[in-house]
Image (cartoon, rainbow, N blue to C red):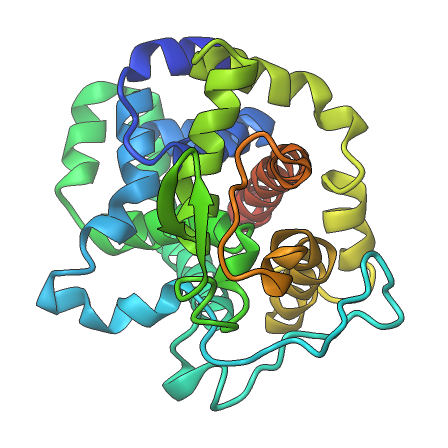
Length: 311
């Protein structure tokens, strides 16, 4: 299924960013990874629902322990930030303060990837049978021992998206939740603005309100992205094995170092100011492109690594 057809079938997505990351990751993954994803999420609607599922179960007592897995806890970067200066780029601390009781996004991504890798080995014969026999076996697979595998997969798709929103990586002012700004005449917190409002405005202003047009634009510009596959993935695997805890710490630190300065720029020096149609908004729109592209590439890279067990 092509990426555009994926979007045409999906209809209303809900939280747009996670859907975009899921579809970009699907588009850039191997054919075998696509076939595994199709086994569990055979439609665009199903894939987008999967990408947003970890947010939907936060109120479920059975998943209470997962709430802290979407972000890093209380820590603040040294200031002033040094933009694109790797020598001064602080590594995200990984300790009891930033990751209490091992409940934080970096630990969670590593945990679910490790679980998925070993779960995949267990259910691989069933997946192969499903791929060979089609929809009937696929439905049987969905109601058997694949529940934990599917949940791990949904968490990975979701958390890799969260990790490319730098306010999930820094506890400064509760990840921007305590910093109030004005956007299009509305008073909102910085975190919400970056989660949803900026993305909606960009699509409305630059892509005629069409999610499909924005997806095509991201697919077209990904080869020119300064941050996507080369900087974010391949170079880092030379230093740390992909899917190791150190690998997750390294690339999340890079996300934070490169883009947190843009997010906090100007915001720290003012109490409340209007962001719409400002230079800040213009820079933010460009940053969102980079981050969505990087998230899609990282998701594809992670899935291909996990599912390479077949080879």
